[in-house]
Length: 521
Image 1 (cartoon, rainbow, N blue to C red):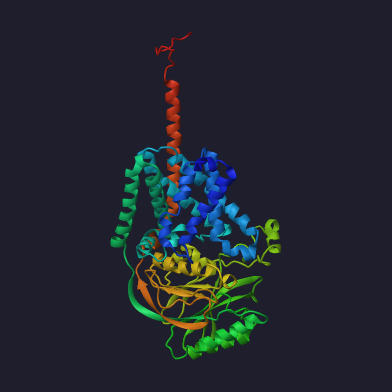
Image 2 (image 1 turned 90 degrees about the vertical axis):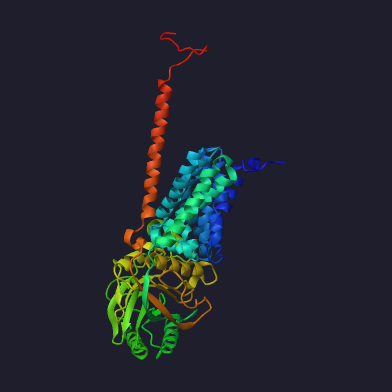
């Protein structure tokens, strides 16, 4: 019977195994939401990479594992991007090739206790550096950041208020490294156990000492979710349904009404009749409306997705144009090179235009709100900047209508808990047809979630908060500290190798009998 090592000697078998174990962390995210599984999900991948016969093979283990992770995380794109989903997964998966090499370098063979101690810091820093790179908008943004799997864990949300989702990613990877060492390296169990204790201590310290936002008031905010509206004239019929649902909010003492992304399919400058109908709704309900216009602008060229505030007299002049667009969904990166993607899927036929700055709006009665559109709620820095600029409530307008039957709506809604905990500000996640949800300043759920099969107007008592979290004050310090750790470790390794080389050159050559060789012999 062949041993596992012999079976894995085949490059293709090993690559297949790497892709499978790389996909395991996805089970910790919605819809499975096995959040606890994240603490061990990387262990098989780490064990595989550390036993690679060469550094080059370990890099391939990292690449194939990254491919599996990215493909599983974005599998819901397959009906729309088809084969291009595999191309994207392969390109992004390459980011994990250095990480696979790093795992073998630090944990391969029988590592010393010192090397394991270093690995508990350097390997998570390597993972975090990958998340830094792939969080760039053009590479798909921070969707599927490992720490985001902890969105429903109260202690993790408290940690997020200190170092954002990035701190959670670092600690989750460190836990996995420690567990892998406990399984595979008996000689180094002491530092592995110390790593587990240190992680628990960090969570406990954050729980005890991190400041909590002080809640001092509440505001009634209504979400309008029209549900699926398909077929011809869908934009007009969706508006009619949203209008009907909103009119039912009259007399409910609502402070703000939020519609989802692309809730208005016409520019209000071109359709003054729609602007008048929205103004009438504001007068009837006694609240301002935040709608989202997805249309070609009448005052400038191009198509924009814009959050527009409507008062009793019509648009108030407060407008936010979406800044971070979904690659392939709302624009094609390097369209001259990758424009062929439109022929194999439902990629954007025309690039949407980008806004230039974030906006905090005055929604009346002193309520200041910070809108984001869809994909932007995945970016921690955007919600942090809105909190810095004085937003009392964060608003995320989304659609996800294309991905109704996938894991995407639940994953998207879960991000609100993290953004709320990071900033100490409540967040309202309003969708057309996805999962709508509201979270309080600690990331706790407020009121019922509206599922993908729901069409309703729902009122929420949203707690307001004051104060500043450490994450808002200090920013993405774990994210930018990780590359520094890698640089320091790299310099240390280079110096160590050079010292070893000089030592070997300085050592005198010896004869077969062990005596120093004399010059000329």
